[in-house]
Length: 93
Image 1 (tube, rainbow, N blue to C red):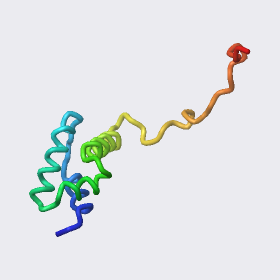
Image 2: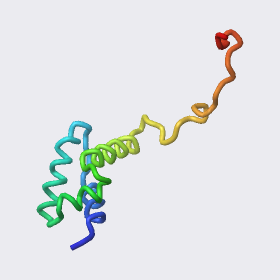
Image 3: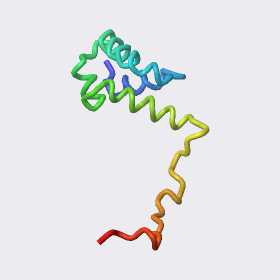
Image 4: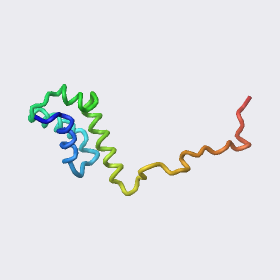
């Protein structure tokens, strides 16, 4: 039997065209698949950082962002620039 981390990576990568509304059912299908492959739910929870549903949401969202032609892969440079305060916007003493 393969280690569960490798199995989990393969299982997730085999799922293509996952939509946001599939997230809830995907967590349940992942648990069913793990059990049918002989892995315990405890091992699956350990491999998914303690929360299978949160792990699935994180993977799906990051995949959707990385495959998006709209969302930038990194924030624009000006997102890190803090403008000096406007002279009229002073703190009230």
